[in-house]
Structures are given as structure tokens and as C-alpha cells.
Image 1 (cartoon, rainbow, N blue to C red):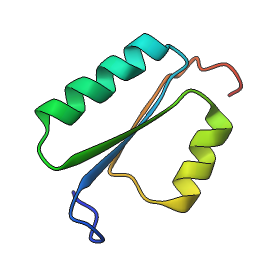
Image 2: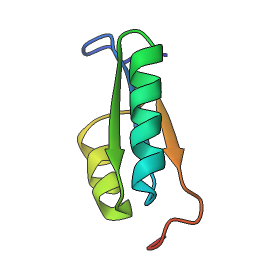
Image 3: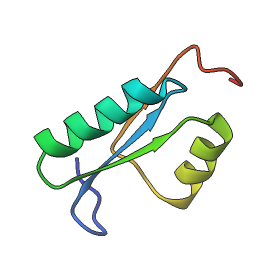
Image 4: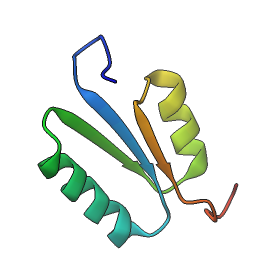
Length: 67
């Protein structure tokens, strides 16, 4: 599924492990064509991002501190 606004797939990565989330951003961004990957380490920042725009896929650290 792709967003209708700019025809790019949007992925949100929410994880407190900075190395893992940056690895996911790099891997997904370079492997998947026409994909935008946003990374956040804070659940409240993630909730703000989700209210401002829609995402096609959200990858969430289930044990994220603050949830």
C-alpha cells in the first residue's frame, strides 16, 4: 500500500536501540524503492508523528520504555 499524497511508502521505526533503528532505516531505505523511513526513539514523538501523517508500516519495539 502506498500513500496517495506522494506515492511513497512510509515506514515508521520506533525503537530505543539507536544502532538497530538506524540499521533498519538504512536497510529499508536502500532496499525498497520509493520508500521514506522515519525513525524515532521516543513513544510520544512517535504518537505525534502518527497524528501528523499516515504510515504504511510501523515497526515497534514491544518493550520500549515509556509504553
